[in-house]
Image 1: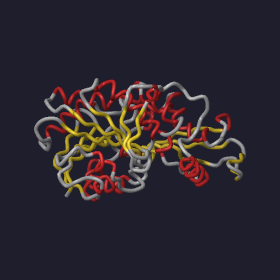
Image 2: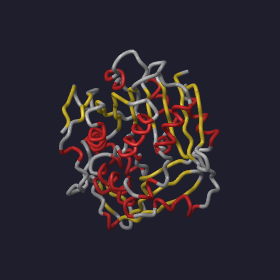
Image 3: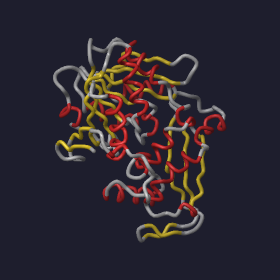
Image 4: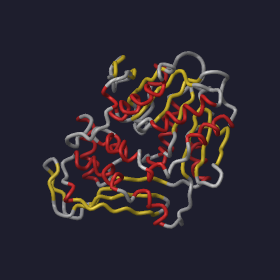
Amino acid sequence: MAETIGEAGKGGILRAQSGPTGDTSRCQSPHFECERHRRAALAAIHAGQLPLKFAYAGSAAHTHDAYARTDDYLSMLTSARHEAEALLAARTLTAGALAVAEIGPGNGNRSSAFLNRLTSLGHPCRRYLALDFSATLLAIACHRLAHFAAGQMSVDSHVWDIEAGSSEGVERWRPGPDPVVACLLGHTLGNLECPTAALANIRASLRPRDVLVLSVVVGRPDEPAETVLAPYRCPEFRGAALEPLLAAGLPEADLDFVLRWRDGAVTGEAVLRRPGVLDGTRLPAGHRIRCFQSRRFSYPDVIAAVRDAGWHIRHAQLASGSHHLVITASRG
């Protein structure tokens, strides 16, 4: 279980311990993490654009965990080895052990691989902070990371919606005056509604000597749709994308799910097959709800987004033979 230090969700830090919080078995019924999430998601569903962050929270944390362990999901991401080696190539790390604050650690599996590679390169992490919109997904990730750490690394967590504003979570957790390595890995940036604003919120939450390592997928808008969409054509992805809609009370049998590759983004839309009522308000047949979006940046666009958010780019490295870019930056 997790021991609360402060108030969770109100600036508190959670310290991971061994216990049942890492149980990823399917929940009995779809649900939101809290009433605040439910109200925000319902409003977004009525408006037809549901931010992707809801596909990682509440019961959706478990459907995401199932999808994140598939080969389809893993095929889209750069290796943790590439991310760690690109960070070292930037020559921004201080000697010795690291303090790492990771935004969006997912289910913790790739985070463990990233930290393991840093250790093998002579930079072990002794303090780790996981940050995410979802307390449920943080519990899953930190359970696995605490097992990986085996007592050699403290594992803490803090709920932070980087799309909503800055946070004092890193500052409260920070072990001392040494810089922190902040990570936004696995193409998390491409899933956000406004990437530049989120990067600015991260910058505002860190100190001048801190370092950001960011990994994204870069691509061309004219890439063949079948190539881009292939990793999403699996039942695990469909379940993960639709889970927030089921939590809102829409029957899965009443939903069609349409995938598109257009204007440099993969989008998933749920379409109502018949009229329905959601929280007392009628939704017509054919109502469309964008419940998934993942951008594929061009190299110039992602560089511009990082700079526009106030970051100073120290190093940018494309993985050999792939479309995976790792950027290391410091506060400008």
